[in-house]
Length: 236
Image (cartoon, rainbow, N blue to C red; front, top):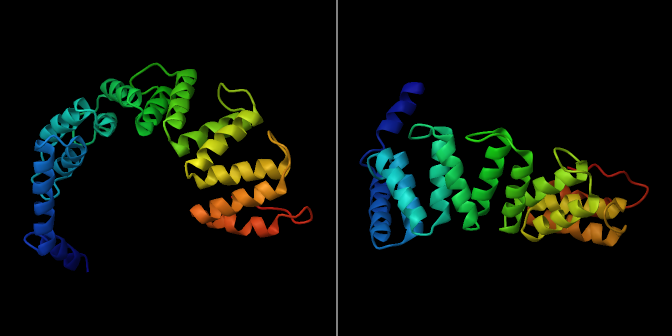
């Protein structure tokens, strides 16, 4: 069975799929050469992974950096992650952090959150939870729903260098919910149901649970109909 699988993998070369990947890589390269920075980010990925073109990590690094220089913050974040993890190239946490910060300065939420994680873990820098929180807030402000959720959880629970501030947590969950982060809607719904950080409002809690359900949190779909004082709620 394993032999059959290997035969299938190696037989992909020269198939229509391989031809499509090669054509896509050629088209992406052309857009990149024409000055499309986002296409350069994608082309760097293809070069790094060897999809539709021979793998060339060194060139992938150069093109990702060029995309960063052209104003595509995702190129900075992408190269930073490769350097942070030692993926396709030698690890360089210090340079990775510099790229994350550069991406964050261009309002890339992924870059801000990557910088926050680096500061918290002490990757390429002396650990600093306070600085990590600053970058998490910047990620949230830049449109990172998950960053808003994570920061809200810190304030709700009072973990790390933050003190417990349920009103602040509710505001962050609201931001995350507005950005489409379903778990933020659920967390905020629970706060409305319990009257923590916001005034108690079961109807608002129902609305938030329904919103989370609509976004895709299946567990939240069962919360709104059960929202009565005599029925305990098992929250995700």
